[in-house]
Image (cartoon, rainbow, N blue to C red; front, side, top):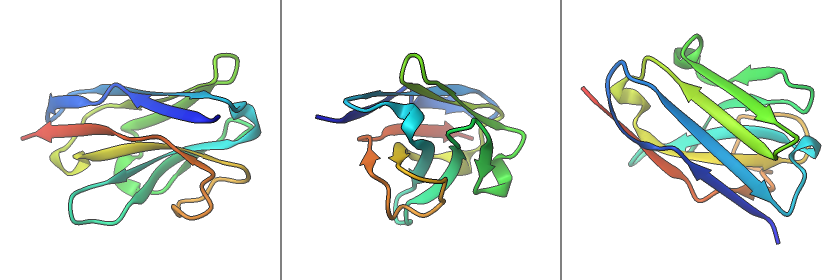
Length: 123
């Protein structure tokens, strides 16, 4: 049984940092491209950032470039999202996603989702 679990969300002031973690069991993440999506209230889920099986980063939102960093530790089946210089518009539920194939900013064809972790950035 596959489980994907995020952690590390919380409340932070604008300009602060958070590090999200995603742990997967029941699958080997080095077989998957791993991504982070987010969904704000009243908005559709959107792709944020993805890391390919080879370790290359793909950004889906221009405003996070230079602020967010994704990394993976295949030996531990872990995915991370380091978020710096957070802004109120980054407030959303953040989801970890595993996709058996190339990175994609679309929520479709994601094989496994986590349950989400809330990130709230106060102004």
